[in-house]
Length: 359
Image 1 (cartoon, rainbow, N blue to C red):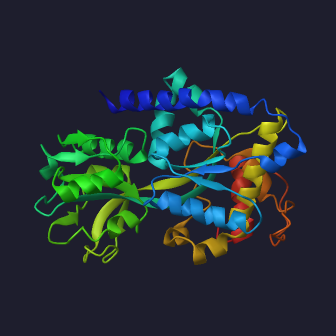
Image 2 (image 1 turned 90 degrees about the vertical axis):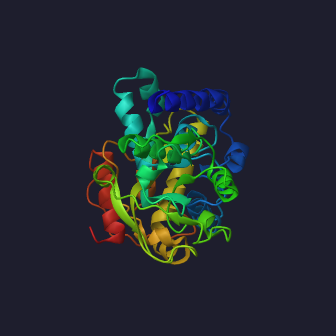
Image 3 (image 1 turned 135 degrees about the vertical axis):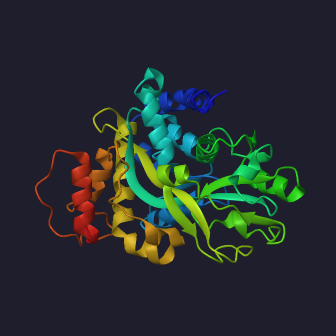
């Protein structure tokens, strides 16, 4: 079965599973009790990945302002993308940019996928995620994976999409095993598989495991010219992980915080969701310097102006970035805004540049 058909099946399984909850949520009355109890959630990833640490960083600054943002584990990018579109009380999800490009490409010829992605918007571009490929030490390069058992992630994860594309683009005929990162590491250490892919911002906690010895395992370099052209060239610096003493050439994809285009005039659920997106977006920008100083190291690499091509920033996000909008826990330090522009992305970019400079 092709990547398209496998991913399409996963998308619709996730989508159909969330319809009932969202439909029910839309019927909730918009009273004071509803506003107080309204749940706010961000879909991230597994417990050892970078997504969940970014989610916790955002939840921490929200908590300092009296806002409870629940950080939810997930299988990864596809689940997160569908979650912000269909899952009730789920305003944010972190997604890989190559998953976005993959979905956008197929949406042009597939009405059902087009319907699935309708209304999904950018909240913030985040950081580049390195494609990690941990293998037995006797496997020297990608070509050596031919005929080997290679874990590529579960089907509704971004790792699955990236790993499948990498193997397809390089025409490596490996036996693909669809399991998650924690199980992949267990099976690699036990000798049940030969290598596994994991897409995560370095450093990621998974590879701090003391069972990964330099004598038995190493990160494979991804230097194929096709991969270097399709993805962003990257380097995993020496000593990023205990078993890795030399720098490793790799490729990377951008992680993006996604949201939904809530309509404040539609019902109470949409109004409360838009307020949540507006408030969290405001806090990310207002506390951006603190996130870079005290959050995951990848915050220092975040470029808030690097919006993936073909995707729009959410209207509720732009409301939160408006210099006139403040929360009781923050004060307005941004310079006065220029007259509003019609394009959502132009408005977003201008407000980010006004606030953080350097554009």
